[in-house]
Image (cartoon, one colour):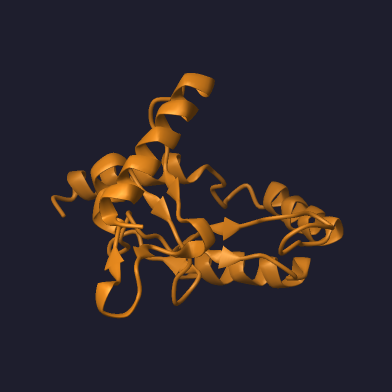
Length: 156
């Protein structure tokens, strides 16, 4: 697959999603957190393609937190929630909040399927978020819009 192939594939998927949902602005989720095509000497990042067409992109990353000032909105880091306990998710949420960071949590299956989290752990985490009204819980697109506006207001 080439960069041109991935761009055509992404644009066709986006066209279909817009036709289906009517939503004009969304973020991109890198499949399996991979932001490249090819391997070895032919390996190329397609982050610039995502930057051209999307407000932001969610990937994997070295750490699960994003600093609003310095994060790359087109390859945001996320916490892989698979197999984590509720207490671990809560710990990450508290850790990132204490540092003024943005935590994106990626979920796959619940109780079954590919890379699941238990329903109990997910419920425990959601209950925590409901109780912590001081933590902003929002879709990636909404937080990305906020960060872009904040950076512009600060002339960053």
